[in-house]
Length: 522
Image 1 (cartoon, helix red, strand yellow):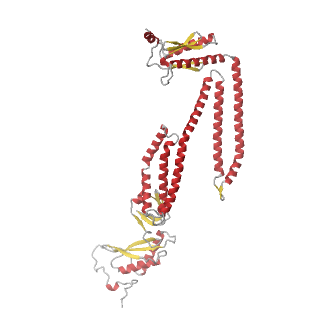
Image 2 (cartoon, helix red, strand yellow):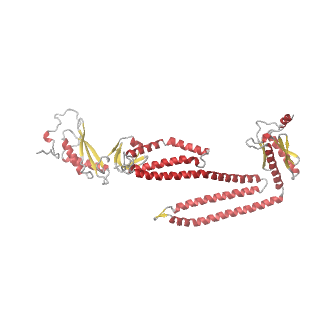
Image 3 (cartoon, rainbow, N blue to C red):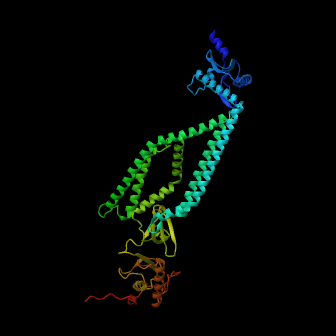
């Protein structure tokens, strides 16, 4: 019988939408259940009518609760205001029906007191006086902030110049006064607006809390600010242990970097390690420091504030994806730079030819290499292109410092080869900037169908600041002059038919001037 009565008393609709009951702008409770055939919306309307009528009749009313079966009646005086059913309790909380009924009664009791206060003219006048005093104090504080701001703006330039002169290394200031002044000014402006916003927030919350109808809004503002401050304070206190561990890892990594730097400097002494010398010491030190810091970052990552949040994890995944998609060429360039560094293919100051480009190496970086041509150009070449092409180094095989200069001419078979060699050597001797020792050499690199190919190879003087293109231009000019002086034309013959006379050099012309016959041994 009791079970049937309970079922008749309370019927819960699965599709019922929760409706909030408010009295004098104060939330009393949230109805979720359908009771006695009434939906939450009808229950709210009925409760509001009963409460308004009861408050119109009398203001000195007592609020209490009375149990009925598994539910509770909330009584306003001797009238039932509403029923708190088990299904009205929020399923996400651990509270009972009794707790929910007591909380609803407390809210209604507060709403009744505020209704009584709203109808009391004397209390409203007290609230207006309190608001006027708070507003005057608020305006006075704003004036104080503006006064302090004007004083700081007037004295800040002098203070900045004084401290900027104090922070100097020799005669050079460490911090520029204009930049430091702008920075401090922006920081002070930010603090000023934050302070104004905080004062305005507190003033608005106080004003709203003085009047019964707007008091819930003021309480919400104050509660939000309190919860925000508590959340920030709890976060700061909770992050302190992790930050301490991260700082310890940072100092350990810093000491490891300093130790590895000293160790590598000792190992770079000639005769210790073949691959580590003064040229590879700097990149090896940087790579070692980078590896240590990356390892330290991976170790300290779990201890950083917010490392376990979904936002931090999503940002980490996004950054990793961007690096994976966009850093393929960058990693390839860096790997090529390491190959060039440790194989010592190029060195700054050497004259090289890379593909179709030639010039003096001015900078060998991690990603690119810069060379200066003899035509006033500076070329920036990707390291991956250098490792993928043939590199000619004209400075590596020379005796001492300097670089190799070479040129090629083709002369017909009717000119004695000894004469051609002698003329090329004489042109090299006339060229300023070509060393006499080691002596220039002439090589016959090919015997083509119509002419042999002669290649002149010499070593240039490195101390003279002359581009290789200028030196080659002067050498070519002297070659033309020497050939013209001895009546030999620089021409590569191409025959359309067999000549009437064979194109051969008689023996008596083998040593035509300036060629010298070999000396006879006694």
